[in-house]
Amino acid sequence: IRKLNDFHFKHDFSCLPEIMSWDEYAFTKGKMSFIAQDFNNLNIITVLEGRTQAIIRNHFLKYDRAVRCRVKIITMDMFSPYYDLARQLFPCAKIVLDCFHIVQHLSRAMSRVRVQIMNQLDRKSHEYKAIKRYWKLIQQDSRKLSDKRFYRPTFRMHLTNKEILNKLLSYSQDLKHHYQLLLFHFQNKEPEKFFGLIEDNLKQVHPLFQTVFKTFLKDKEKIVNALQLPYSNAKLEATNNLIKLIKRNAFGFRNFENFKKRIFIALNIKKERTKFVLSRA
Image (cartoon, rainbow, N blue to C red; front, side):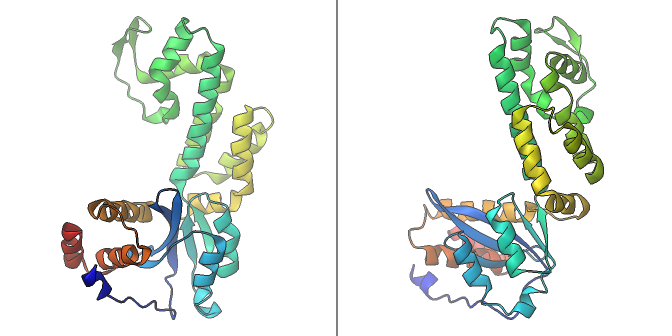
């Protein structure tokens, strides 16, 4: 603690990177904090004790408007309170949603639909047992499934993963097309086809998918940016993993300022020092 008190970090409010990433992490149980990082050099821009709009706004308003207008890209998760805030503070910046979280929304909706379908089946039926055994195949991109054929006791025959998936999808119209088609167009980075499919099927799909589709349509511009621009929150997610490591090695922090200093020491000072700090954390 004494050594931490010797360190004093001053924010430079005269510049901001053109591309930055926003995210949150858990400082203490049940309390989320905000972090912003330079996308290119991975330096931490700021760590704030809370993630409320007031806290974030008050921090970034310390930068002149001219400085904030130089920011061109902000990557972030699908956390709607950040959207309007980012537009107000950084009027020239494009918001890019993290692709992983977009796919995660689809995956969760598909998982809930699958559970509802299974609950309608007889637990002793072949269909129920097959879906329960091979449910992960429904969540995967069908183009990447293995073509190797193995004996499958559930079906009592030799089948590839693709053949099993086709059988599972044949059990229910709700399971059949939409998730795999959406995933195909999303991973091929085809925004027009992706949103065309959503708009064409909005009224026909399962209510759980309708909720997700409406969210996607509301965030269309930001999702199109995610498909067209080579940016994501992956680097900041990796930084958050390092922060978890710092916290775990120190058996947690009660004082936020000490925690913040440790993060800046470990992640904003050159790599040789970072290794030393992490080893002594």
